[in-house]
Length: 92
View 1 (cartoon, rainbow, N blue to C red):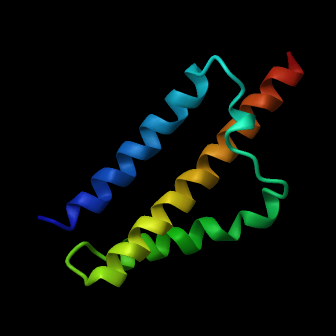
View 2 (cartoon, rainbow, N blue to C red; view 1 turned 90 degrees about the vertical axis):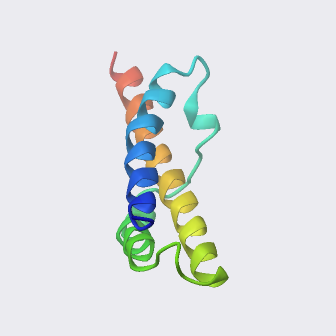
């Protein structure tokens, strides 16, 4: 049952983050700024693997790895969505 918490947090973040970025009155590009987003794309699969390999039943190191992986994944995810939003605004 506790293993489902990681999946719940992951799905909640996947749904909530795009909605927050699209509803922001300020430019999300100022918050999520990555100079080379294409170079960071392999990190998506690495962070997802780390998130689902470890669980909250693990020791303190496992919990830290999950936390850092989730933060970095959602940061990259937010940067990708804000990049798409800025591309959309430029085309209009």
